[in-house]
Length: 113
Image 1 (cartoon, rainbow, N blue to C red):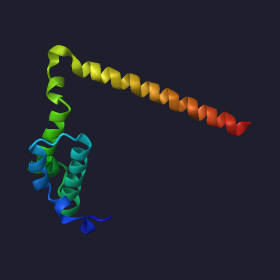
Image 2 (cartoon, rainbow, N blue to C red):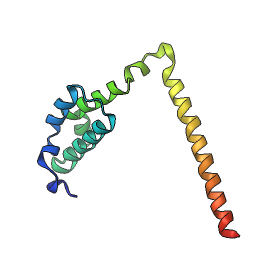
Image 3 (spheres, one colour):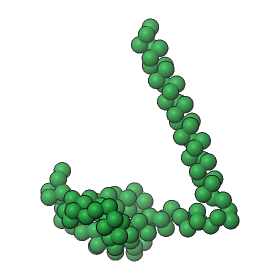
């Protein structure tokens, strides 16, 4: 679906941002609004990367996402939460990659037999 065919209400990123700041709590819904807002900036208004990052609506939507994910807690260096989150991501990434490699090896072995 092209942006021209989308519902015009869905393309009003400024209204979305104001609504979201009133207390939106569905992270996936806020994320979808962010993607729509970025698409509107880039495809309808031909904004560059820095202009998109500086856009008031984009910043307000991202602010709510940061609030929902308690990002402020990560910036408190006294609890080393950033390091803990980073380590958890590394461990889970390695586990996922290992599982995918095992599945690939199993599929290859099944093809060979």
